[in-house]
Length: 292
Length: 159
Image (cartoon, rainbow over all chains, first blue to last red; front, side, top):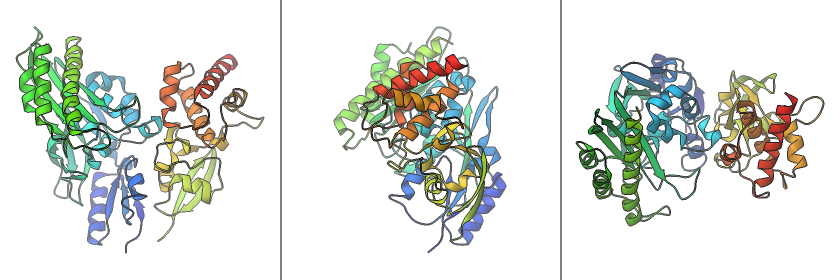
């Protein structure tokens, strides 16, 4: 029977040695970002003692860097901070709108996209948005940093590729070039504060004549993990992202989805709606790219 | 289990306390420090009754560990009124009868303060979205929204 403890390392090195020491002592360590999932789980489904290792004081996890070729978003940065950054919102509107959809003002002040990914819920709103914009997870590991594309990070419901001695530092995201933009939509039965029935993230690039040259589509809450939909991307590339192409992308998302029936919706309903969201998110991403 | 020593600032005063590593800030405020103005509603971050400001950012104190208060500035409902009486926001909640049972009211008032500090002239949609994380089962919200609008006008007039 272990005990609860709380540690707040200030560097990646210190955090890694903390995790290693806890593992060696046979203690369970849990990284803590905003805590908006962890605190609820600690009082309900997972009451076991553990050592909280707070990522919010790790310098590297608080970095937000908008470079010419790449954006880095630290795993410890609250959604509200991202949403208040007008430059970031202009560059990655789809990712930021996904982060902004999660929870109330109070939740936004604490919750992080890193925590959303590490919680690894099938319905995490930022996960399809991260996948669509090509985010790569930077993971601190005892042997040095390793990188994993976001689509390969989550392995099942609540599980992911992190070892007990590793943690997520942040995300490397290619800075969108030219007429490149993204969008994320989710469906919930009310206007605020609910968990996705399904969601769709689309990132695409248009050439000077408005023809799509690259696209990535990801859908959420319709399988045990967020899915990449290569067929939807293929339906958009080479087109002007017109109604016909969007309808084909919608069909590809619906066909690939493997939803379950629960209180938020049936298999049939989710399958249809995830197609509709793909179509609409695609149109928004297209219009954003055209406006660049 | 050993308690952790935490040094923080609450409503402008330096405060030290000891708490268990897994105690929420809400539990620390109420049970260790006797600041019972902050209420527990759901304890899952859905209702906003436990809203406080951390370094001027609105959060649910039930979703934060007490130990995370180290080195930050906490503002609770007890820090809203001035020495000479109620804050305008509190006065307007009273005038508009924007409360009935009152359990949600401290959270609403702290959330309103956080909103008006950031945006002194919010429109109704902004107010309603900002307060979407505060639940009230009595008033139907309209009186609360009117109170916030009136408080914003009064504060603008004072400024």
